Length: 91
Image (cartoon, rainbow, N blue to C red):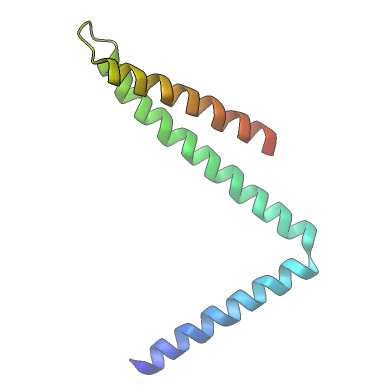
């Protein structure tokens, strides 16, 4: 068990140092990898927020809808717009 733990710590250290050296020696590629990861994260956040908004849309469109539900739906719509603007800026 102890050997496995030591091996894991050494592996993490080697990976971190290797990643930092790669980033230092290849800054353009590192920036491109980071940008692609950011774009993918924003796309995932947009998809999740749209799914959440779809659920709130079902409840907010009812005639006796709770005002808090309508406010949450509107807040989610604003969040989607903000995330989309961030995504457009990254591309």
